[in-house]
Image (cartoon, rainbow, N blue to C red; front, side, top):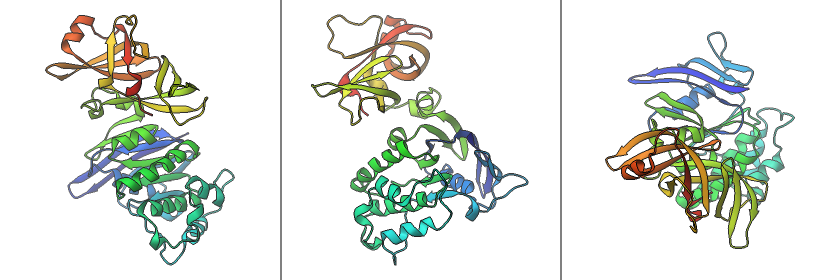
Length: 354
């Protein structure tokens, strides 16, 4: 089952035209610069934009098309805004129980204690929301949304209004949600680091249009999209923790072989996300004897693109995962780097980040 969106909306000089399908599971990023229409699209999906035309279908349920319009208050949506607005006359527990009154709990929905535990709110239940930090208020707002038992959770830049300290505190809770929630989440952001850390799929927006939609790593490594350019271009690889070594490294397995990385906070058998930057990959036609590089695995060149007068961007297939490498034009000539060429990628262990 999928979430299928095909919406148009015109307001003055701005025109939204967004059509895409995403899986009915996991976190999907609506990503793009400020003003590109991400929040307007989220509001249209929630039923808050009366001028929107088109189709909204969540799984087998149609919320909007030419014959059907389910009003916003009847859509099973949880909405988390940039600036949370809890009820200041209630304590945290009262705010959460208010959210539970919206609709009955489905068989697979999270209960009160589960949501409180997931978001670390046990110690806050008796406190008035007026005395909470920005990050604590946002956790309360997320819990309220979850306790309304939505079929779809919409999150509109939940970290953007927070300072760095509160942002750092809230991110691990979002990590937990990403791993544990059974419902789909549309997560609006213009911060690529959040998107890479939290989401599985991406809808890239530019000027009210969808520039690309699909699995996160496929879009991160597409040479015709802006994320593949610049010093911080990277890929996100899923790997399974095999073991933790005594020297502070973790042994990870992915479809192209083994990765050694600084110890990850996960148990053997868990799946983790590993970020590999284009600038940290070097290419060779044969592994160097006696090299101290821990991560060497086979790759196939799939595509090239000009990056600047001295460099070329190379898209690689490493097993099932696409990667990016940035090399000089001289290296390209010496190694005969071209589509179809089989090489080896080398990455320092210290360069890998979860």
